[in-house]
Image 1 (cartoon, rainbow, N blue to C red):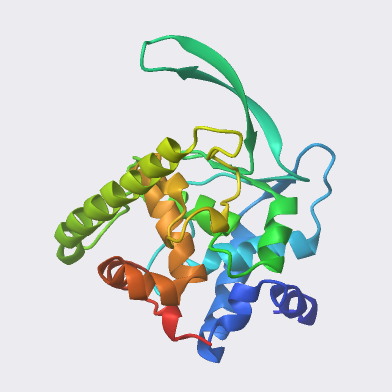
Image 2 (cartoon, rainbow, N blue to C red):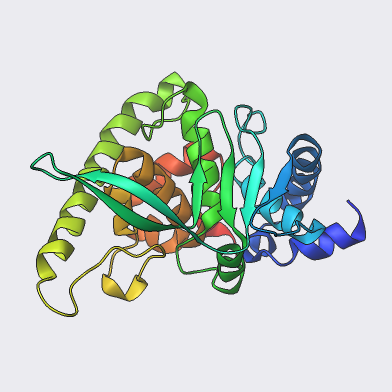
Length: 256
């Protein structure tokens, strides 16, 4: 890698934690990623080399211990300066539809683009241990969708498939109970509200309650915790940690 790229990679705290051998392997993966993937700026943003390398470095961490293509079904990386508003049509339990404006930090489309907020990627660089990493989150969705479905179950070796279903289902249901309890606590001016970034002080768990939305979001949230809060995840969710360690072929709890 050119010296400037090595310097830019140092902006990603997760990369700095990697053992030297993994840093060297990551450097090669980043070169391939940058060669294969297109980046496009949105809302007037001009994509710099720094932006490209920081995103590529975080995304390729997911590939370090796996035999995998480079997110073969994704399109381009679309980069916004900051979060953006999206109008969604929501249906309540009575079947009534309502238009709601939501703040978006990122999206991953099945067999399509990955969309990211650069402002929030910079926040991740400044807060490497908050359990939230936008690039890891959205690119884990890409891994999940390699079999054509976003269901929280990526392509797995047969030996891992049975334990995956059992552990992931149990942990997902447990997080749903956490999210439901938080919702039930919210009956006043300080009521619990879903935030586009996790409110870490809102509960004592390791996993962001946003993962209770569905199994696909649970896999993405668990991936974030695996890399950014690995010691606590191993301590409190040991079987989940072991499952992800086998899937990713890495042991981040052992890194400095």
